[in-house]
Length: 452
Image (cartoon, rainbow, N blue to C red; front, top):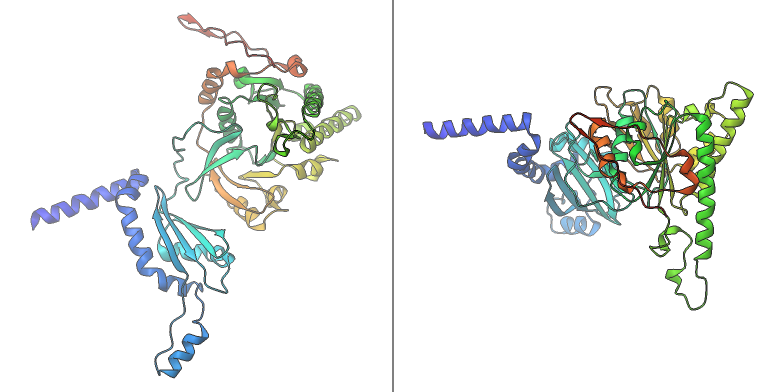
């Protein structure tokens, strides 16, 4: 008996230590079993308490009265599947007639408390089927992106969602995006993670960093073009617009519109072109967009109008030419001047880190989802990197990017420097790389990137 008690105490102590130091290990060893038992035993009572049941069918009530039996209880949604994951449980439910997926979304907080889990997110899989993704612990406390297969072109894993899934920045699905956040909110780390992920892909990186290039210059070995002040930004954007025009001429020449060509081979963008003719896609990263839009004199106003016009044109026409925008800033409102709201309308993806006021959150999500605005305002300042990500469809989720150090991003860019393409229109803006000196040996030069 004493040995049994000692064993139980050791197991209990191990569980407490794992829950404190290694929540993932705790969940995989103990948490899944306890949570599954809680969900299955409390399921009917929780559904009833949360108002997620429906009255029994009339024929059942009539049958109960005819046979003088007690009236049947309200019916809960039918469980289709309960699947454990590395971060929680996935519960798939078949809705009863009269129920709606929104009811489960509205009751997610009550479900979280009732099942004693960390978070519950509801989403509709198809008509009549709802999936509850329940996390057993705070997956955003220590973010570790799982090792995955090589990412697809222009699809980069950048953060972890609160439901335990990986959040990807997919430029093919969401071509242009806005990223806002206050100082020390983690906005720059998110951007650094994005650059490190894109560095290993065959894409051209173009940057505009009006903080004298302090954010992008350490990564400049992987940048095809870089501007560190508004005057250079005007020329860079004009050159990018010219490159876009040349790309459209190529698409027009290779559309192959003839009777003999199948419909699937007719193209209106670069992705259906033959591989040997397809131009390299370009990702334009703009850091601190307010520095491009502010003007203190007449000459600066003319420059500002040119910059905003070029950005709007790239936002409207760039996707088919393989040009994608990632615009960052602390604020992005109409006070920045004419054309800013038109540019914001082109930025489908929205990411908001911690903001200083509700107005800043409204700039990102005010026209999409009031709930996302509230979630962005509630981000804790002690959790840098936490953000709310959404798009123009109205869907949103909390995410947190891993802490990518500047050294890690620099190493990723240096390792893939040979992938940096050369674009003739952007050649004048190719960053000049400083000579690197290592103690004990000289660092070899990066391989020359192929021209196209």
